[in-house]
Length: 141
Length: 454
Image (cartoon, rainbow over all chains, first blue to last red; front, side):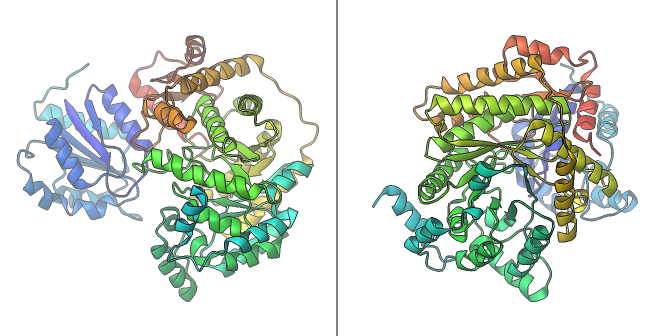
């Protein structure tokens, strides 16, 4: 199973990005990590290019808020993205906010899994649960 | 006219520079007070020099910060540059400087030196008559360092590797090498007029589980790149790693090998100094704990035998520190240094041997690259993963090396990637760690190891 991941926008916080990469690999995913400072178009292009099943976007400085709004419009321009599991996690607001407000907002942008300040493994567990739900098989290597 | 002088005229003929007077600047450096040169202090010092960090947008606030530092008995003043200037965006820093001046709100995270210009800044530097260290993070620092030296700032931090790999995703590394070659040459030329200009490398890198072998290799390579251009005073540096023993071993090996490799290129006449950074990783939010961490850092710096210590503040976790907090840390560190007497001499021969073998193996692999110049050899070695910096955001970095802490909190390499760590050393490093765990628990350990001081 292929995952495209990276940190959205002008965010250069790299530590969690590397840890997400390692953890996904440990769980048997094939990871295409675009690293920090990645724009939305680059994410979608990479999903098409690799034929990924999952797009996992992360954010630490909260820039995702601004970019999230662009997702529905941009996603509509691409074909074949309907079956891709869209996940976003990290610090999803600039400043502070609570998950009850944030999660529905991002679901409205088209994300299937929204993890605001959620522990990495808890987040990846919910990804695996959704994959199972969708009857997809995780390839273990 | 030399090629370098032609390039200098192009760089300084910039819309943001108010006519650069080459001969006036050379005269100023030639007749400048020895007190402004940190190289002069290193030569005559009797104690570890204390240097804080700090930069404010306006002249007024920077001046006030320096007054606080001088009251706190500072040895070396910092001039930290704002992020727009670091990216050569002088138009934005100019606008933000004006907004900061008009509204009394800081719109920049440092001092926009190019916009203030050397004529203005020199007044402040010569007024305090203390050595000033330029702290930035600029891949193309040509205009910035010309302005700095003309202002009386005679220590320049940074380097093509240490200012790029931790800070940038895709600024071309080969360009950074060439831009820094210019910096080295300008520093070398000015060094002939008075005391030497000191260059300092930025050892902390990503400050995230970087093993000492990688830190030392990069320190040595930036030192060699600088000395081969004629720089006569150079500081190698590293940051607190989390284990006192590992810090002492790192300091000892770094000092020894810096002398060794400088002699290899016939540069033994250059002065080599050791700089220690107080903990550069994530700080505790609790300000009292932060103060404890800072004083422990000072103890270790003394054990390491550093020539200069660069301080943090109790407000590290919450943002840019106030001048009060910043001055307080200087006074506290001076106090700690004053009472640290009769320190034991700790030598760990086994660890020193392992680390020396690792560094020499990587250095040899770099020198064996077929390229014709050192900077190209280093460039290729980063490109092919012989040098791999954990947690660098740069696309050229391999990210195949994995490190973790052992039970004594030493940073150990558990996956070497393409880095030519000798088999014996690799087995030793892995032998210190519990590798029976599954990858998910190792990732959890890494997360814990990064936040060790929080």
